[in-house]
Length: 301
Image 1: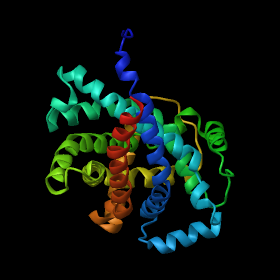
Image 2: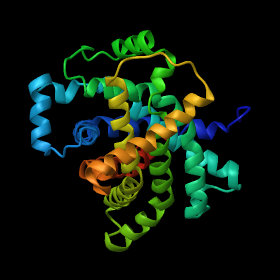
Image 3: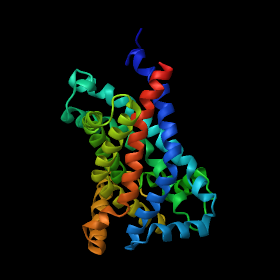
Image 4: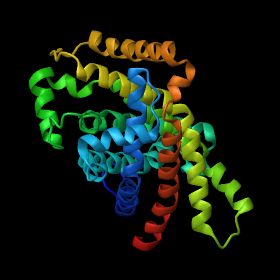
C-alpha cells in the first residue's frame, strides 16, 4: 500500500535514520562547539589556539557549558537536518533520474543531493541563528535558552532577522551534502579493498569519514564566512528589515563582502580557519552516519 505521494516503504526508513542521526548529533556536539569557537575568531582577524579559545569559553560558561551551551538547538538542528538529507536524497534521485541512488553516478548523486538540501537549509536557518547566538553569548544574555534568543530577535529585528546569513547556510548545506553523497560509495568501495570483509562496520566508518572530510573541503569557506557574517550582524545595532528581493540580494553581497574581508586580513587560509575541527566534525559525522544508519536499519527493519 502506498500514500498519495510516497511509498510507505520510504517512511519505514525514518525510525532507523532518526536513531542514527540523533546518536551522531549527541556524540559529535563537543567537536561542533570547538569548531564554532575556532571559526568565530575569523571575524576578529585572530587565529587563537584551540587551548586559548577553550579557556575563554570556560571562564564565561564554566565546565558544564561544554555539554550544555547551545545543546538544545544543536541537537534539534543536527538531528533534523541529517534525517531530512538521508530521507530525501534517495527519493529525489529516483524522482529526477528514474533510478535508485545505488545505480547512479557521482554526477547524478551530486545533483540530487544538492536539490534535496534546499528544504534542509531553509528550515534549519532559525535554529542556526539560535545556536550561534548561544554559543557566542559571552555575557550569558540568553541564559542558554533558545526561546529567549528567538523572542529577542523577533522583537528587535523582526522575522527576517531569523534568516540572517541564510545564503551562507544554504551554501554550506548544499556543498557538503552534494560532495558527501557523490563520493560515499566510491570511498566505501575503496575501504573494502584494504579492510577485511569481516569488518563491515569499520568499512562503513572509513568510507563515511573520508566522504565527510572531502565535503568539508568545499563547505568550510562558506561556513567560516557565514558564522563571521552572522556574528558581525547580530552584534550590531538591531534593525527591522521587511522582506524584499533587495534584502535577499544584500544577503548574498554581504556574504561575499565578508569573504573578501577575511581574505584581506588572513589570506586565503583565513577561509579555512578551524578546518581541522571542521574536518574532524564532518568526517566523524559522515563516519557515524555511514555506519549507524545501516546498523539501525538491520535492527529495525
